[in-house]
Length: 68
Image (tube, rainbow, N blue to C red; front, side, top):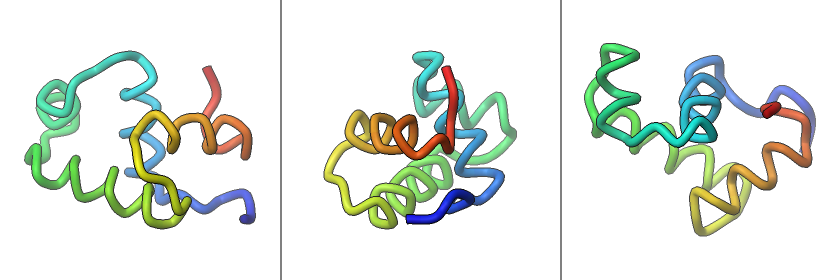
């Protein structure tokens, strides 16, 4: 996978996830619905071919898509 796989919004959401924010908190912070947050997370998981949010975070860290 190439660097730059995430959209700007997906990157924002995963950066908030690694800060231990809930779906509800992320939605409120970004001014979008919880369903939209879940859709972005699901789309990212599909792109990465992983089955959990935790696996997605690990892969994104490995790929340098997000940083702690």
